[in-house]
Length: 138
Image 1 (cartoon, rainbow, N blue to C red):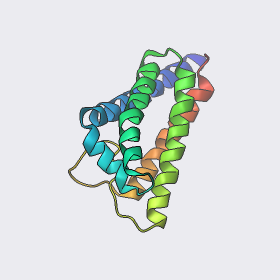
Image 2 (image 1 turned 90 degrees about the vertical axis):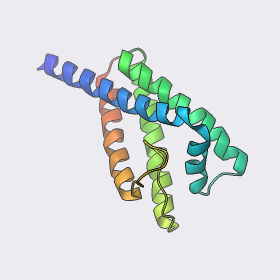
Image 3 (image 1 turned 135 degrees about the vertical axis):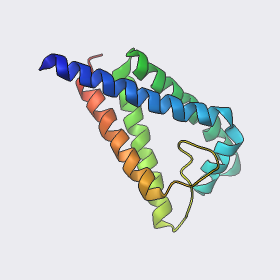
């Protein structure tokens, strides 16, 4: 049974890391588009949107890489969990304020993802991150 848990944890860790790497690469490839997504939340001043767009994707990429490789995976899972909590709170705030925006999570432009879909997805990613955090030894 321990082998199954270890393999499941490793599979979930790699999958979570791959999701964050994928999301990061899309944002890194087009920082101005991601800054526009950040600006749509209407929370930061103009320069703050570009600062977040310049830094957040690299944090996501580093966490994703750490999760995929397994090095410092527990720390990366903790940071991913914190980021997902933040993302959930931000998305709930857009719903509460009546904003109809695309979260900017996995694509720039194209068909919009509803806030509720993004919240559900982020809750699933949070559950995965907490599971990896709890089951991974540093």
